[in-house]
Image (cartoon, rainbow, N blue to C red):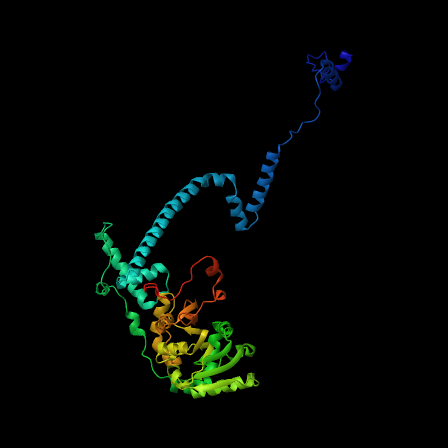
Amino acid sequence: MFLRSLRPWGKMPGRNTLIIPRVDLTFARTAARSSGKPEFRFKTRKVKTPEQLRAEEEQKKYEEAVNSGSWIRKYGAIVDTFEFNRKATKYYLALYLVFFVYGIRYFRKLYERDVEKKELLEKRDSGAELSEWEKLRLRELSGDLIRTSDMAKLKAYHELREEWKKTHTSPEDYFNPAPKEIEHLLDTSYEECILPAKDLTEFYDNVAEKYDSEISTEEMLSFMGSKRKWLMSHCKGDVLEVACGTGRNIKYLDPTKIESYTFLDTSAKMMRVTYDKFTEQWPAFKKVKFVVGKAEDLLDLQGDQQVKYDTIIETFGLCSHQDPVKALQNMMKLLKPGGRIVLLEHGRGSYDFINKQLDRRAHKHSETWGCRWNLDIGELVDASGLEITQEKRSHFGTTWTIVAKRPGDVLEFDELSFLEKYFIARKTNLDSSLPEK
């Protein structure tokens, strides 16, 4: 069998040529079987662990995200990788250390502020006279609403305090300067831009017919309709609207909540426009009065028998009064117990760059619309003695929405915001530097 398996290959023998035998495959298989060793015809595949399968799946998702073309998915996948997080660990630790140090400093300052406030309150309650700096500082620590003039003083005091700290390092040193010491730091340049008050009766008589057409676009672009709607939603019972102008709030009026309505304005021609609008829209409502006069003369207009109101509203009117503080005081005297004064006004903003523009263009605006648009509305309300229950500002702080009440009247629970009800203290225009009654 073996010899038959050998076959000549190449040239025939007898010609000095080497014959190379070729082994038959049949012999090779027979030899393998005879040796007792197993014959492997296929390759084996190793079974992968669940961890390896999960790693392959994650790698596949990573490659899909990187090649997806979306930078959000791409960088999200990179941040989610183990390698990135391993390298970023040191940065996480550094960031944690920064926040830890900052937290210590922050809470130390809170503690120092609390101690300072406690000392000032004890001094106030003991009957001792507080200096101007101590009063402003106590109001600041108590979270009172601080207006433009007082804020300018407070800023000057803080600048002086920083200079004072450089030369006074002992804990026993006490900072309590006199008002004259901040005169060189006090910025009162804005006061020069406040135009003097004047009687605008004639001015508004002249613009009454074209007033609505000229101001409509400006109010539409500033979404003032929603503000007027908010204002009128507070009207209930007996209502007085001061400086009603051409009656631009009439279309938001809800007569089902109102017992009577009184319009007041200094311009007879504007009042005529208001009368036409009201009688056209609410012809069946009869308990309405149209009074021509000034808010400063409100008590004199009432006579001996003064009518009280549940709601008194005013829209962009404080900037046009000759004496806005007196006008507010008259409104307060005509409020019923529990009544509210609701104001929608424009005035100084929340940012210096806005106020600079208001001051720079104050004269031009007065020539166009008559009013003084750079007054601090909050300062006027504070000076009148009214207690603010709600104050919000929009349009970089230049649009003021205020709800105020008589001092001593109860604040309703519904007048508090959600945060004020459960989490934070309500900011008021009350002066915390005054002794409690």
